[in-house]
Length: 190
Image (cartoon, rainbow, N blue to C red; front, side, top):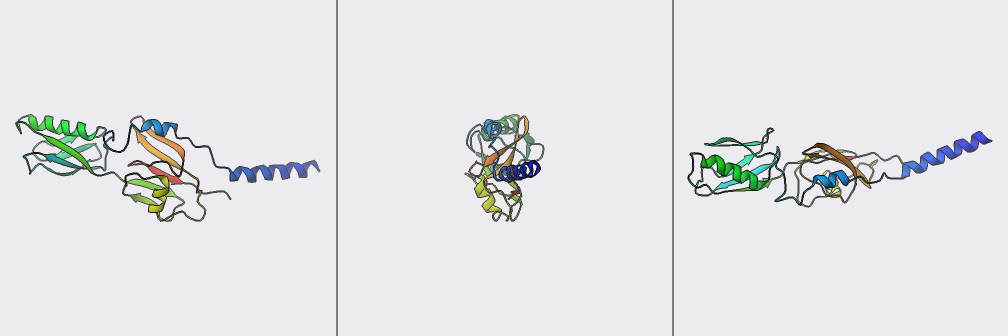
């Protein structure tokens, strides 16, 4: 009799445990974000920049940040911009141009296209997608053609690259996504 009660209790505990969602762990992800996508945004590989050099139409163009965090411009060659902001990139380009190429360079750098985000797991079409401003995990799932039938629909695991390395956390579906994030939609138990 005791054995039957013990097995019934164990089965009930496992069944109820599968219904619970894990606690959200966003503190490390939140600490990695230093503002909205814009002025504080750290440039990285895959970002496409619109560089405007006033009075120098042949230097003004779209440049993609390569895997080494650089853009390659005519006349001045590679310029390291990875990890910096658009303002810091403009100042770095101005410094290189000032070094014997243009007397008083004035440069503006804008983000033309953010690096993509990635979504994996229990979605209809996992893969790489272009980032859209104001995106949440829920809108990322919608871009990936929705949930698969066995998807956990109340949370996801989000991984973000920071200056200190990769940071992962369990997040609600309303959590904001940043360029370059990887979202994993887990399978639900029941």
